[in-house]
Image 1 (tube, rainbow, N blue to C red):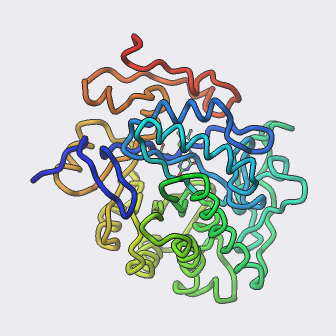
Image 2: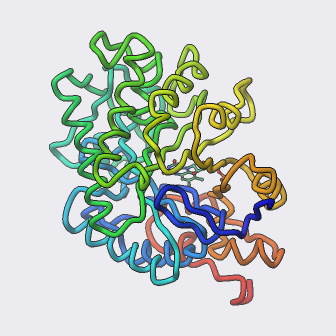
Length: 357
Ligand SMILES: Cc1cc2nc3c(=O)[nH]c(=O)nc-3n(C[C@H](O)[C@H](O)[C@H](O)COP(=O)(O)O)c2cc1C
């Protein structure tokens, strides 16, 4: 029987009522303690008809924060805030997964707590600027290379964040392994020039994200843990001599873990076919992403190429994207100037289709 975008699915122990996924989007609306705010609860509740909602990137430790007003999974007040988000999504019948995102070197000191540090596999500053509330756009901070004896502690932070995510009521967790953040920094030759067992050879470069996924899976089984990749993604000054080889080795190393899903972003301008690479290297369900429209999403589900499709920009102005897809309604646009500004404006104030959009 061919599958339909609106049909149910199970990814590991996570249940989806349809195959339309809210993709993770950093929106910089967290409160003064980096806790989820009331408008964040509204935002996720409004989008709960998705088969699965993936949160914005959430930092697992103070050092893992990079951007201003982003939320954490470190303190009790943050866990309590996420509990309200999870309750809101569950009360609408949805499922929600926390994206764990450690920014590593993609950070500015002004965006972080006073005693935290910017750490990375190697002390190589990323070229690029980042917005700060204190001084506007600023060059990215110089990172400190992690010592070998510190790395087990950083890996353990991901395990603790997973525990807190489950305490808050999340259905699952997703490790962010792309876009130039810490796991991708360890994987890639341009950012990892270490000479210990976490750098150098291919086997050594994949060690960090493999051990992180293992730590996350050890909390309550691999069936509640997914991960996100985009081989060849140059975002945040990332470069790798052979991303195809790197990611094939990474996928091979986690192949037998039984992880809930793999979330893969396709690239349109490089030779690498990321979706084929993911299909060959991962045995479980694939969520595919980037620039899908309704028709193409239906086609990849019907053909079995993917188990679900995630949507980011389409969800910004269309909280009821599932209903709009079902009814063929037009999609509302959004204002890119309000992507990271505080407040409900351009964030949680988009009307539902039935409300007269
Ligand atoms: C405002 C914004 C914030 C984003 N933040 C994240 C993030 O925190 N984590 C992540 O993995 N991807 C993030 N992304 C990437 C999206 O999840 C997605 O991969 C990308 O927008 C392409 O999908 P689309 O064509 O459906 O928009 C972000 C994208 C946007 C537009």
